[in-house]
Image (cartoon, rainbow, N blue to C red; front, side, top):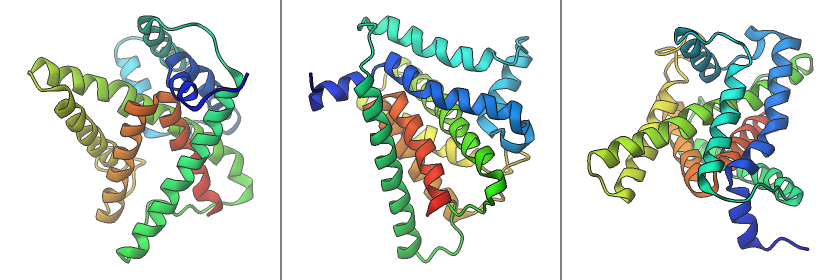
Length: 239
């Protein structure tokens, strides 16, 4: 039976479907860590989350991916929706993520042309020898940056603003903006030894990209946000 658009939209936004969708990317990233080494592909969000777990006394390597899965499973359990996955929905999520990633890349190129940016955040230098490590690293960035800045931070800000008495729509707008600003700042050496030097042009674009990802998270779920992030990064290698 064909999946109708409305059904696809709701099914693909479910936490359980998101977990199934990101699992291949998560496995590829974690396998890449063993094959290529942590320094070759570890991203900032991953490192920060693992360091936080170590500070809390949880130093087991596989705890972070297990924690990511547990958050999605717990979210799915509280949503009281069915425990069944449509394979065609998962396939559709790959197509949607690729399409949205290419739209974001096109928008980035257009902004660069319109504002005559000489330095852009999407220029990637790559040799074929490190292509597998780079692709696996981008899978990890898509998952763990979305885990930190969207799946954890956005609900935390929403909860705090709701506690302060903000209306739901106002809280959502502020959660998107604040999480996106932090997402953009996290890419620079102000916060990370492996970050880039601060650049106002890339800061603006990354903030806009963060708003895009946060909106996807709220409207389309974690899986599409993570998949779009990863597909955008990978598309920068080809274009």
